[in-house]
Amino acid sequence: MRARDKAAVSALRGALAALDNAEAVPVDEAELRGVALEQSPVGAGATEAARRDLSERGVVDVVRAEAAERLEVAARLTAPAHADRAARLRAEAAVLLRFLDGPGTA
Image 1: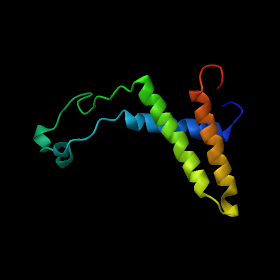
Image 2 (image 1 turned 135 degrees about the horizontal axis):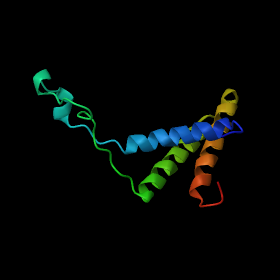
Image 3 (image 1 turned 180 degrees about the horizontal axis):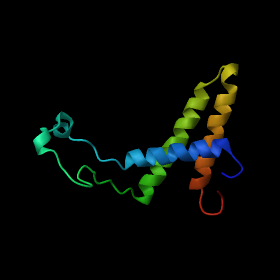
Image 4 (image 1 turned 135 degrees about the vertical axis):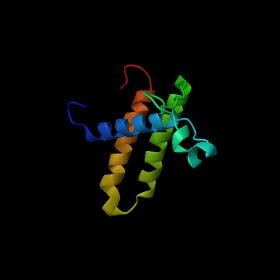
């Protein structure tokens, strides 16, 4: 990232965000309705929700899905005006897939 590889930075930021979202706990319908102010939790950390722990396989699946999504969008960008965007998406997918290929290949 020191070389300012924009494709790598963008791909890794997107993958980290996707992993963060995958660890989120689903919200209950009851939680969406809210509670009365006097019944709301008070104190440091009272509103923190536990996060899910993804297995190694879960992490690989999320990163692979991110790469596949980029490749799918790049394939749909067929107009010459979108050639740069398609190339950038393919480069981002390549960065993500390189991390999944194993140690020493990234």
